[in-house]
Image (cartoon, rainbow, N blue to C red; front, side, top):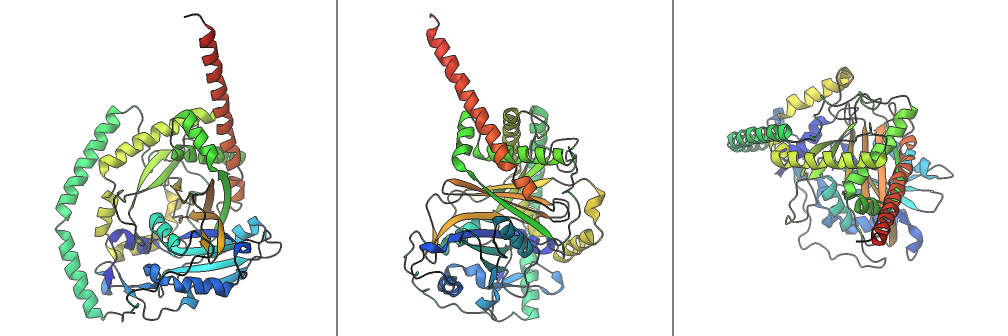
Length: 484
């Protein structure tokens, strides 16, 4: 029995009938590389042989009576792999848009809290012969860093790599703890945690003061949630339905723009998303009255931390997408300035500040509030906290295989929440940047109308980088001709 940290439990409390707190990982595999051919059963056997490398996959949630403390994990005494792995066929002809639509349908259904909080849907029938493995993982189970580590444990670096050795200790299920034990542990843990509260209050006050000083001194400050945020069609109350879209762009183009203009790859990602959104909203006649504000998840793992297979260590910083600027290069430079300031604010507050505070979240009041917030569509009655989430997760640079099938592409996307109905997540793999977007279907019925604009937004920056280099070379040549 292991108690969930507050940050993990918070994702459970946030969930409602319209707000689903799971993430999606989509792996596209080439079954032609498999010796002996592909079969769903073969994949299932491969996963079963590696379950001991995925410890969170056999844990389930047990709530504490009266909501006295955060829930606990136990090793599920009723675990059955067949409850979690399913096969589906995409309707003919199996286009990429049809695959995305099937994934949107999968995204629109919550996970069963009575079982371990994950499932895999295997989609075949795609026109190019690939097979899509759609892994749905509740955010309370893992963030992007932990999910990437788990995925690495089911993949190999060669198509014929042998199964991993069996576990040293045999997995043992746990009985569901009796209510009295859950109550005693909840009270003891809760009282022990209270001794850290005064220090946390002091650290927060000092951090807020430092942020205030930074804002007064700095020429560029990150946007303030709610106050500086416009409202768009995807900033409203959610329905259970989802839309989903993917596209893949060349990593080399991002690196070129980064090097030429002296920014970061993440700045380029934000600028590409900003350019696509600017065009998308303009076509719909929805140009906002101020720049869009993006929430950017930031891992709070330290470089020397051991790899994690579960849990969340993440905070957020806020950046303006500066979509009010028409010139793509000026927009990129403005975004870079804002993100530098946002990083400073993030560091002044402390990467783990949010993680520390949510330890004290009262389970039942928070969950009740979220249910009523969704039920009465309260997100429609005020400005959104932010407009969207944009996440960038670096992935592997070497090819991987699953059950002998080569991994062709990998996509990931996090949840959308009330009032923040758009999530764009980028995972790099080999030489590609894989963009996945998730939205509420009623707010963005055709999400491809947005993702189809991403290549053009990147091309603008690549062309500008080429023009900049040409002009630089011309200036250098002219300088060499001029007499000293």
